[in-house]
Length: 480
Image 1 (cartoon, rainbow, N blue to C red):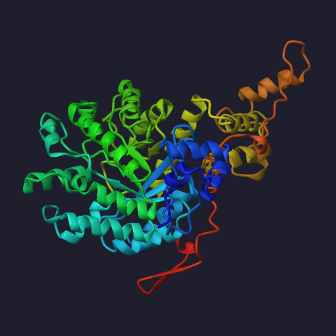
Image 2: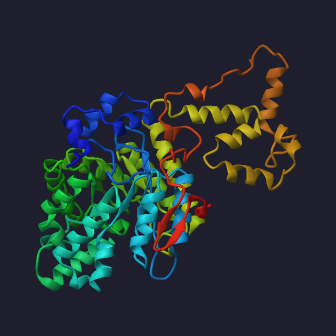
Image 3: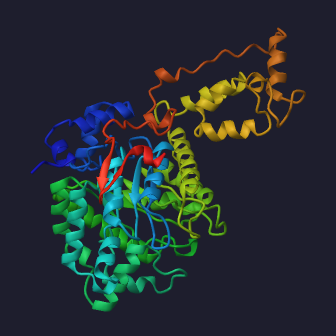
């Protein structure tokens, strides 16, 4: 049986995936190996995911961003999901999670794995519920069967809500919003209906055996995470976290890579506390947070409210941020929502990397600032997080090519442009104000790839030209 990345790292081996990660992070391959061996970082890389460009998740590396995609009973199909995948990768998602709950689950998952250069995650209990016909009819055997099948398909990491225990459920009784995790609510209902312990908990050793065979990273789900500020950091949430700490060590004993999911709604002043507590309880395993939203009053703008909390979480040590789109709490995200959510979270991740002093992270900011001061509009667009949007906004009022050399934009106009005024004063040759000649060489920057433009520069050479699913042939171009 091929060994997992953590098993090989413990044996002193620097794998090809570790070498690729070291290249993307501008780090020593041996340091990458040590972090993986100690469980402080994970490289989600299923043996069967042939199109994968390996990446790493860990607090000692650049902050990563996950994008949730997937269909529902009401909307979306395979073509639509491939469009979302393409959009997510193009705008810089480091991983994607296929959270499909509608039809064609196998076909959508297979297409996503085949076409994705980034790790693909799933929550297998969703498919298990579909196959069972209802949550109350789930069985241990069915759950294991679904997990094994998805592992064989090439899924790189799976969220397993094994920390929701029977003894935890009474702790949720005083909450305002109860249990808001899909997986958590399904399992809580199953426990209540059957009067038995969570089958994902009782079968966890068997799950780890499957994961070890395929090198699937386990993402320990936060099934009792808070659904509003009032429920944050409560007894139920922290009781589950203690169980996740135990499960982390169990998975490590099986040679399985582990990351731990965190809360989605937390007041700003409690965000760092949540991160620090997880790092202590779970022995430094990478923390992956769902936001968190720092206010509950902004439906339609939750990509902003959550990006604020995400920045603080990453600054405190969270290794990956799960994006939130403007549709959160309101509807299934579409392609434009994926783009907006990723922009907000790439900003959050980059801001945190700048704040924590990641090597070279601020070089990108400095290079764009220099282009802005020089009125080099084309370079500003090229350096922007979302070049197409930056140019589109500029060209709404000044569309002509001649304005690409103009020393003003439409906000201040010629007369009141402060940078033009400052430049003219410096060019006048006075004694007090010297010229500005700083220039940042991004090509020589030691920043990790995610902290340099362009975003979405994953190696797609492993993505096949076409794939046949259910008698229909798809190509990457179908998602353009």
